[in-house]
Amino acid sequence: MPSVLPVLAVALLVLVVLWIPFAPFVTPKPSRLWRGYYTLLVRVGGPADTLMPGALERLGPGIVSERTATVDFYDFSSSVRSAYAGLRERLDPLDPRRDPYIDRMAGYFTVTSGEAEQHALYVPARFMSLRLYFSLWSMLGPPARSAWRLVDFDPVEKLISLVALIAFAALMSRGTQRRSRWPPALASVSLLWVPAILASGPSLLALSFCLLAFCLPLLRMRLAFAGKSWTDLGRSRGPLLRYLGIGVISLLVFFLVNGRSLAMLLQPVAPFLCSLLVVLAAPVVRQAADEWRRALVFAAVPLVRSGREPGKGGHRALSLALFSIAIVVLVPLSRGGAFPAPIAVSGAHEFSWDAVARLRQGSKADRLPDFSDLVAHEAYQQTVGFGRKWREPAPDERVYRQEYLVNPITGVVRARLRTVKVFDSTWLASVSAHPASASLDALLLSQGRPVEAAVRGPARALAGELPFTALAFCALLLLLGRDLRLGLLIRGNLWRLNGEARRDQIP
Image (tube, rainbow, N blue to C red):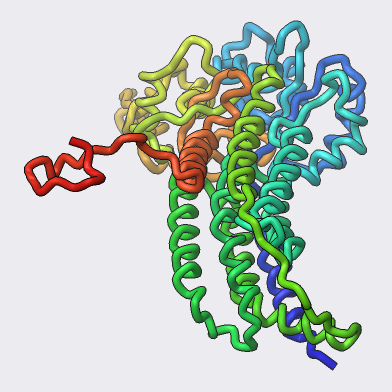
């Protein structure tokens, strides 16, 4: 009886590696707009709007919305925290404690898209967007007639991506032969990328196309060697090292362009490692499969060798990949609408006084409150009782209070200035240290760097993924040109103009 332990061990290891990016301890999950948060749009007055209070309770804490957000303000004795929805009852519109940060917070929670007004909610990315999408479907009903929309998950885009991925693997499994052995086994390797593609966008789809274009021919070569040793690489050692080098370089470029968190890096790393494991274990798995086949049925004896003709599977696969990437990029752009989106500030990499100055200098008229406004808000609410006006504090700025001391012996009254607040680096660090979980402060500080915010169109959701997608698109174009042997029709030999003439040389 053949042993199934190697096959079970490989399958178990593959499942564990694929599960790691979605494990509860790997947070936050990848998101398109706000790092650590999924953006949810709900039409005001629609059927989903009436069901939102119950949905917010079921989704858990930490959601930043008009109903759940909190804000800190001064109550003439200390700083208190209040719900943003009930702030109108506590602070009059003419109350000086309603600073610009509080007044302009509404731009994060209500946006106008065309003629429809929508509520914007920011759900913590504690689990993958696919799970959140179906949870919202069960709580709010189907997203028909623009009742609600999860910006980070587009079902049409995901469906196109999955169909294109499987079709690409099916065409590549044929290679340059119309009749290729093990086509289902080769095409099934594409399933390793399905979880990552469901959790990410066009950039990861383009990366999967690039790596599968090298992985599937290598796997076909490995399956041709029915050896029992994992280390017996033989003739596949060169292509294996080439695939390993291409994968490492691609993942490094992907992380440099797209990487913002550990979860973002693990999304492509997990299927790449699993594909390497499958390639290495292919001869052993094939040996076990042949033993099972011989134990169950009689082995077939070929009498006539089938003729093999060159096909165009690789050309068609690469063309399909290029077309699919273009479609997947255009689908989110066709959705339309506008929503609050972060905009990176050049040169600002940490929450420092230099970042506050850069945000203040590059502020635009249509911008939403950012980190510099948060710093001004905290400074104002902590010193409004001492008569300080609203403005961004300067580094090491001090706030004084005049007090009077009476000499107990002479009875002389003497006035002096007492320092009540110092806006130094320690104070700035305390502003970004422990924000409330459901506050706008937490949304801004979770980005890892200071960002501006403004209401932008759907192109902003793909801005972070387009650079690597364009690089992968060009790489696939080069592969297609290489396979089609495209080049210049006439090529000169400039280095040998004065040399000995050849018959194939153009004068």
